[in-house]
Image 1 (tube, helix red, strand yellow):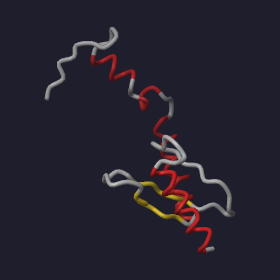
Image 2 (cartoon, one colour):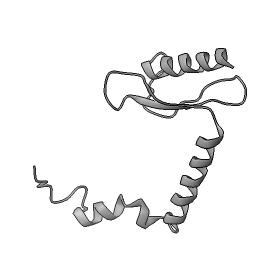
Image 3 (cartoon, helix red, strand yellow):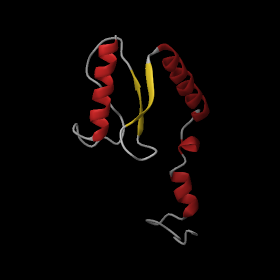
Length: 102
């Protein structure tokens, strides 16, 4: 389906593309992304991890859980809308299984 929208709030396609191109807008974005990847790789190598935990029926309903050094609260970044949501219950369950296993 071809996009027939000629403008949005006074911006044409080129202006919209430029507005949403964070790689071009952020100085040294390549260096920042490489640093982020390197730090992520180090964390994955250093921490116990549980990847692709399902919290719902859809293919993309998955999270990765990285255990902390000690017990404590779990913080989740993602589509969680309330503590009683499926993702919140799934992460709490993963955290309690991890605590019981250590």
